[in-house]
Image (cartoon, rainbow, N blue to C red; front, top):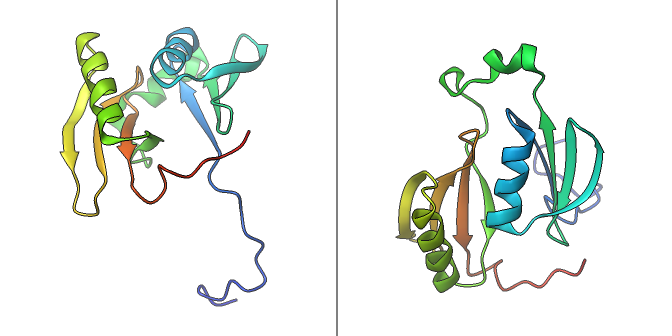
Length: 145
């Protein structure tokens, strides 16, 4: 099938699930609860937690102690960043002010982009880069849970 021939491919409902390996499950769980309002849906065991915003799903998986050395930031990663959508540029600024007060590492300062979006980037406890984003074409969309 040609790369641009998608007539027989069913459409998706979007990228609604992300799974991350983390070095400290408790720290990462608290981070995503505090800063992004993710609620615990299921904790099947001490190594896994599944969280939701009501429309998105985030899985956190504890890296086994014997594998932690393989997952250090100096080894690089293929994931560039993930993003959380915000209601408005003002809400981006409000969250930015709060994370700065708490000493969360800022990767890129707030910026107006050429496409009309507005965002800043921060790092989670495992140095995964997160874009906090107002994007005018998708931020206004209302999803139902």
